[in-house]
Image (cartoon, rainbow, N blue to C red; front, side, top):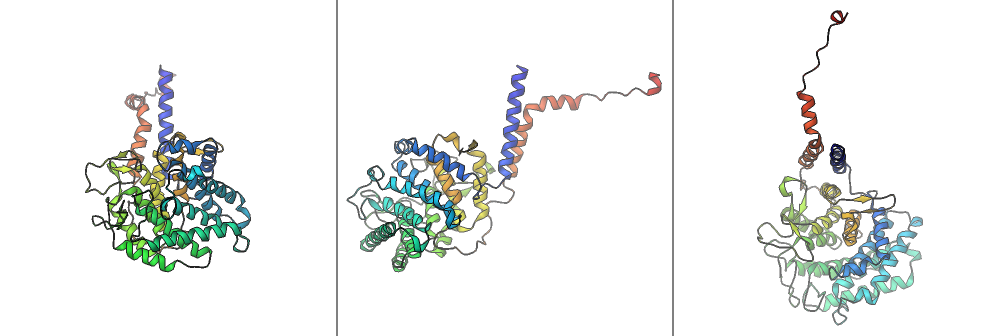
Length: 417
């Protein structure tokens, strides 16, 4: 029994000290295990993980492939042109799975644009990402034509609508989906002859007139006919909106990001930073399929996506703090070739983590970030203290005995002789 307790005590100590190390090592960089994550996610996709994810929530299949492809685009953008073959191949492979009956299954072809703005916006963004990995003089002509045609259809839908927030499903509109689609039009104008600057300008003006009155942010849902705010702004959609809004209007995006940070970034129990699903004035809030279970009012999915939002805004301090806390709380497991969080039980969660940790602005560069920190630089100190106490706890009785034991009296050499 003593040996078993000793082994358990050693394990607790090793894990606790490992937690301190994870907090100390920067976790948000191009070399922070993302390629190993992509290996795990790719293996999972080839093993049918997207079909399993679809059983958990309506866009599970879609998001797993889309985020896998987008993360490969981010990896490829960091490589020289000659080293992008793997990233281009994997991103195209992911896009091809979205452009199938299975990828379109949850979405209605009767909407405008067809299959709804969620499906069309995300696929257009990924399609533009694939195009961005190719040298302008050697782009695949078919891919460029498809990107141009899809962008034109999306722009026409916005131009014909009485609201800036188009429907993703019949009778349902989420402003975040239209934000992604509009960002894809701005991406079009950086890759192909520009056409949609006026479309984006009108869209931003219409959005400013329909902000959530309670928070001053884009609402979580909107009336599908008028675009008037529906549900109060929520962390899961706001984190995504602030990730993409910078591609459309960097100034407006900075305003929205700072407001979002003020209302939603928190430190439950004074420990690591996290993101609320609802602002503090909303009481009795519960989680749903978008947010997942709420822990002290915070959403894991919103917290993960905010890493990417902070990165594209240049808020390196918050991005690093959120990612470092995730390295502790996310229970990462690494092998020589893979890395997964939460023991890999939910691969779509790994896909969100990998994409967020690699997110960068593709279209517009935001102004230099000069706002005060969202969390103090010493935020890990309470966690480090807790971890060190846990590390010492299994040996406390032994240490106390050693400290309480009276020192041995040394017998003088003369007395011995």
